[in-house]
Image 1 (tube, protein in one colour):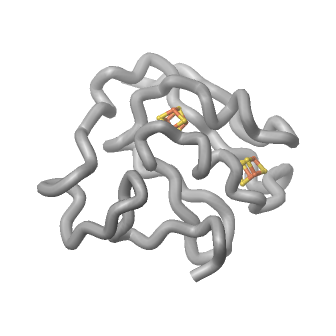
Image 2: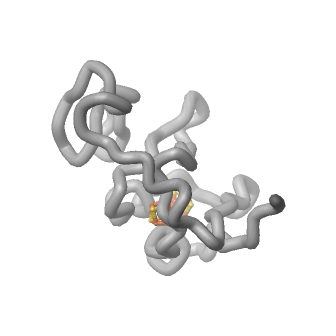
Length: 94
Ligand code: SF4
Ligand code: SF4
């Protein structure tokens, strides 16, 4: 595991065996806008994951970020902090 990667069992810095029961909260229903990553532009620096207040972002298999929208409240911090502006906040369908 790299310095800035999260495993599926890490949330808010604590290792949990099942974050749906222990730790993470489903805040997805709060969201109005959702983050969308432009993987062409993304450098994989993982700053977005470090700044996400809900620990909703983790490293995917490619080493680039993957967002678990169940835990994303749509605050836009990741989009704001991305140094190459690879995350756009978009209105969700439905
Ligand atoms: S902060 Fe931006 S460039 Fe860095 S990993 Fe996240 S989306 Fe990619
Ligand atoms: S919008 Fe907010 S909660 Fe959702 S992934 Fe980005 S920083 Fe995390």
